Amino acid sequence: MRTCIWILFLSGLALQAQDKAIKRVSADPTPIVSGREIFHAYCATCHGTDAKGGGPAAAALKTTPADLTQLARRNNGKFPNAAVAETLRNVGQPAHGSAEMPIWGPVLQSVSDNPRELELRINNIVAYLASIQVR
Image (cartoon, rainbow, N blue to C red; front, side, top):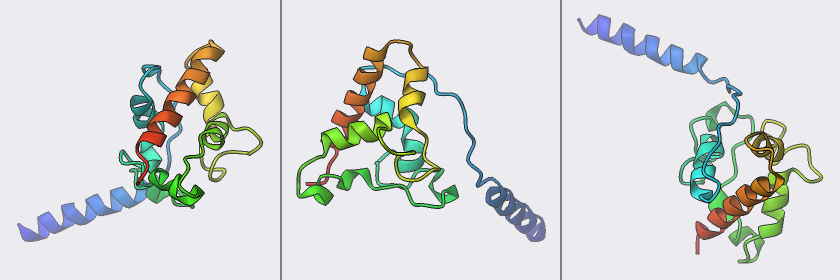
């Protein structure tokens, strides 16, 4: 009986190790007004629900996702609103973080044809991230 349990346990570990690939899927629409919900739908997979970089897909990435609660601390105590918004829009960079990171401007744009909705989504994510900064 113990041997059977160990075989099942070890088989499960092997399956988990093989499952470390990142799946790319289409973005589903989220409520525009909730930066928290938008973050949890699109960002938490890598950055974690606490935004500290430990999401379920983090182990499959070559570069550890950033701890997004430390952005203000790393910028002399001031949250970099414009830089975060530009990162989400993907202005002047191939992708935020590394090439493994999704380019969020087009992803967020894909859930609506309205450019105002894209800006509102980005602004709400930025406001949410500003609200969770470590003091």
